[in-house]
Length: 477
Image (cartoon, rainbow, N blue to C red; front, top):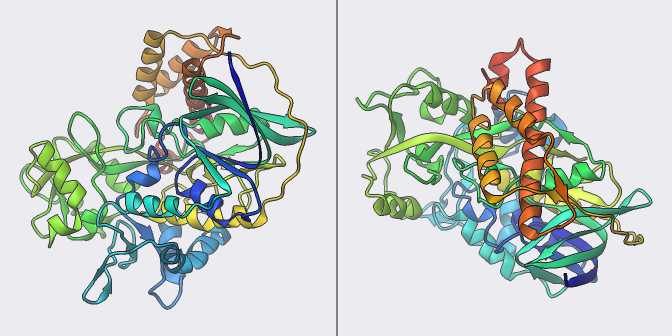
């Protein structure tokens, strides 16, 4: 097998907003390599519809802070939340300096509102295609010291004298070794492990496996958010929460308001809406009859509904896996407990989301904490030593069956027996030294799913008395 070797100051694994933010803010004297598992646009950041939450136009960040903590079920870390919302007040101006153009109307910024927000504070770019516009703009601003490589799968982190010294993987089908003074995990969440999700198929929890393999701590893995409104068709498409912020309501076949008993109605926190819709008998629709300028404000949604022959005035929806609040344990600057290893974005557990993420805080988290990682990163070159790599020896058919099993328990209401069955079925999988890209990718997915399954088992064992709270974590019976 041919081998490619790269030697860089900083290796960033991922290509979404968290990764790009770090790359944009590192000193330009550094040699930075940013690698994408598939195309750079195959990142959840590019799919973001809702926008970026910020108290930029408010007198202070106090209300944004309160809304974030309340939505988290008071499980978020207060000082981290303060960091997010206070430093996030300048995010809009900073993004504009990089060329991002936010939507405006006759009164100024066209800010919207989403679930559990007490006021309009969601900034959009290109209507419901904020992520695509922001990412395209920022990627064009990447400086010459940043090299971007697509179709790179990182399957192992290397470590020397207690410090991460680089990584190995595949560039296409070529074996790749990268020596680095520091490594940043910006690999995203876990949604791609199953089919019914708002996430990219390639986002499969790789960062969790990589971090755990070198001794980093993983926390709150059972805290999984399900978005209430994915388009209820054969293949999932996210229906942005901003639509409800603009006046759409969740109704049943008779037109009754499904969330009518909640004080916030259809704009209740995501976990509460998702739980209600999951337990609802019969179809649920978004009634958009009160939404003004629908075509102008939600062009992607209109095009998607047209393509599926759906009446835009009555959109069928159902919950789907959306966001992982847990992840790699980091401090306020993205540092893990392993020297030389940082984590940022959805792969990291920064403590700002608690048991339920407030809508549109995810892109804000990437920007705020991505800047912090870049500002405090330290580099140290260590010997690059590669240990023997093995992977699970699984056929395509067997992996497909495992993936189907994952989809049966990685739900808003998983059955304990299905989790146990998956863990038992994958416990004694044979390993091989014949490492291929496909087997490496499948191995990472299975290992990530096993990490989640074991975390769910621990949640079941430790909090059996708290079934209501665990529903917000995605663990209920």
